[in-house]
Length: 472
Image 1 (cartoon, rainbow, N blue to C red):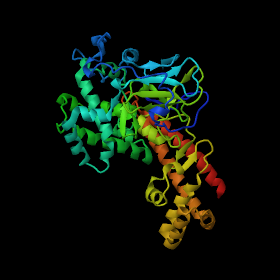
Image 2 (cartoon, rainbow, N blue to C red; image 1 turned 180 degrees about the vertical axis):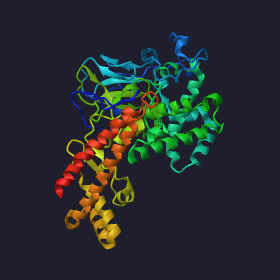
Image 3 (tube, rainbow, N blue to C red; image 1 turned 60 degrees about the horizontal axis):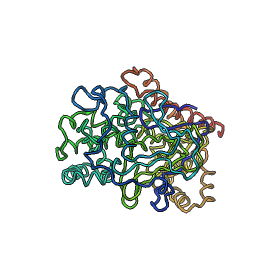
Image 4 (cartoon, rainbow, N blue to C red; image 1 turned 45 degrees about the horizontal axis):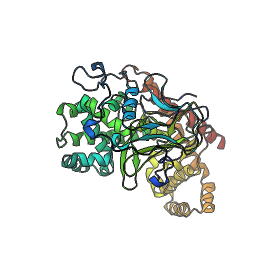
């Protein structure tokens, strides 16, 4: 079964049997079954001695003779096998049968050619080659702190993004070091082109429905703030590097699309080479964990058959649009989409609902009950405040009997409002697709994934509209 679309980098994996998601759990080291099988080796070489024996790639892998990795050409070869050898020399371990795989030389993933039993060790990555946001903070010290202070003053909420900012700065610093970077082989294995919201052009944004555009713009705004903070000159980076939009955007997208977050004992973000090649599935067969020292362990969640991709969850599978905006792919195995009622954000918040409650079924168009709630609540707020308050109380107290009375009484009004919403979105998606199809793929390579997203929305909403029409 093929993907609707994929990005050059991390993506969704679809197999013959599609699976439903579980969140990546972060267990304590004592409860992790693979610790005995993959015991951490003795501490590895210090940071600048990470390549004592491996042969370096030829100059053709670099940008001219500067020793810098060439990210200007989207089709530049990713030397993933050299990265695997580098990681193995410094303690990375794989279960028997676990291999790198690519169908096209662009998208890479991990697969197993041997059976893996549930609860088995799949992959171990030592902390010495894991990038951690807290370690970056300690390494760069005051210069990074000054940049972070400048960042958090720009916009409320950016404090929560500091771990991502640290990883981006670290990636820029290592790119700056070129062939002298201890992470050179990992950097040279990464994709050069991304398809997510940050990577999209203004013309791409003109082809996105409102919800997708909102999520993509949120990431783009965060990226812009990061760049502004970096360019203030606090962090000791080469000015040619920080002034090159291609490089800083690439570094942001690497950090954004490859991290795993932990909350215990403290919140931080990690990037583990090799483990960052685990692709997404709605029902993953593996989970990633980090111990207090920052060692990375990947364990199987259940029995895995030979020939299977090894997968983890990148996020909530009930709502594929955030995955599209953040990672630049659209999973094939999504069973639902958000109803796209972003204009009812205040009603959603007041009722204490979440987007995962407000879904349309992709196969049938069926509407989640709480979708009806938010549309009725808006109608009552605009026309009968007393009834709106009573309906609100019924919603927050889970008084289903009272809620149903209101739905029965105002059904036709709610139905008409929902019909209008669905019809208007369908009309706008057709217009957006028409514009996207007029673009040249050479200059707008993200058009296919945009069309895949829009078509999923259109197909689902068409089924929903047919159901609404049957209701009256």
